[in-house]
Length: 263
Figure 1 (cartoon, one colour):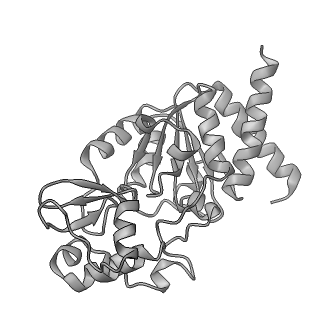
Figure 2 (tube, helix red, strand yellow):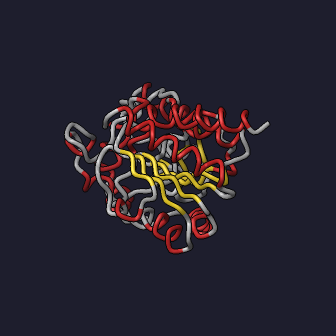
């Protein structure tokens, strides 16, 4: 995208933010990849190295060999790297500090929005997270770093220390329902937003991809910042095909400038 055109679009996004009252930000893998976290579907992504069939809930709980494979992958840090927030995460957190953010709805499982400074109660992780593992029998939770240490010591299939039940990462697997309360709240926030900003998502994974549909149906303006096309592009008030961090850094700079000019 040529620079003058991009600058003009960034100005429009900043104006929409300034004039909005209830902003919901929706993030996908395109935000996480800029922090060095691999995505699943792109060439060279996780599905090129691991079988997606091994990530079904049924197979995980039914087959010890599947659990061993998954814990082996997680032990290698494929999804649990020491990633740090990038400019997109920090720009979104700045929206909150400026009093402009209602919430973040995310498909990502890395919890980098919280690490960047967005309050936990404003982040709705539709697909769970990789910061915890939970026992499917007694419900006890363990920080993933503790489980990672057990894997590093040679344990192949870690189980619950309290009851020896199956431990499962807190991320949502295929065939597993999304967390009901999180989904309900995210749906409500989407319906009640007046500006819905999609960042780094192709909007093809449901039910997460319903969120911008709910927002638009309720009259919200839609901004999409993504490198590739999405099914919602024609509905967007502003559509930007560029990297999340690059765009959001400039957007937040423009927003701060506009706010300072008003005071």
